[in-house]
Length: 400
Image 1 (cartoon, helix red, strand yellow):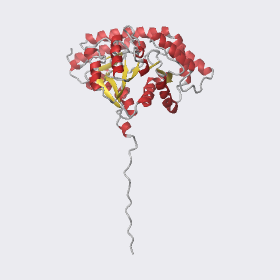
Image 2 (image 1 turned 120 degrees about the vertical axis):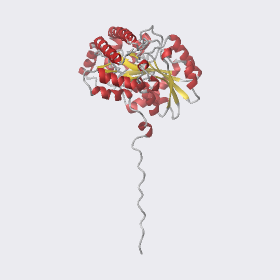
Image 3 (image 1 turned 30 degrees about the vertical axis):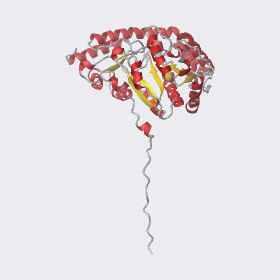
């Protein structure tokens, strides 16, 4: 008697990568710099990193901490001395009082702070409003926390300042968080006290949490307005993120901080302790020195950026590419629509023909089409040479 055998069934292969991660786009900035890295004699106005060396006293404090053997874990929240220094500095520079024991956490840069905050408060399906053009990580950070990012477009005619009427069109019953970044990367936009008051009233009206990324606040060229967290009704609903990379030229230190209400900081700490544990110890000692003894160096760098801003804005406008004067950060966002080229075509052609690197505005959201981002965190000599090359690029095309 012949026994029939059942054919072996092979299960369909499971996706190796989680769908919500597989769907994430790679950074448009990094993709563009793959082109830059393959070329020589390039002047880069692309990367958002200070060209200054970290001030010596900060480096010296870091070295001293290593010499003394401070190379161990710190508290999950961060070294108590650094948290105290952060809260004192924040009160002195931005207004607002926070308890260093329960309302402050030291993070591995602002990026980690935003990530653990998103994972701490966002439930699947929660909507997060954010404004575009914006830093490339905001929408992916929300998606990785299983939230739904909702872009609210800002416009050149408003100097890229977020408008409440646009927020009102986007808010729904599912909206939980409003994410802000002023002074802004990539546009250089900044908010006045009046601008912040309007946004604060909107957040209170709709009972929203606010993530305020203020990493460029020390690089403001207009009279400083208070942190949005200090406005009526905002302290208990706002997490403020800041750090040391931009104002103190400490990008490689990877040190940031967040201050906010105890329950939110405590929730962030849970995510932090299971993923990152703590920020690097030696970097934390350097950060203490920055906050307590490096005001002069910070101001020197600020003043140099402001001079560079004035030069590059004047040169772009002189070339017929409208460029509003940034209120903060170290970026300009000139309008290149008069060239008839897309942002990507402009940036790619400029790189290949004149060896000048700028970032297509579309790297920061689709509404960035028609603009490019240029960083003036480079020497005045390089800025002048880059602008001469851009002038040649335009003249070759009969522009302006």
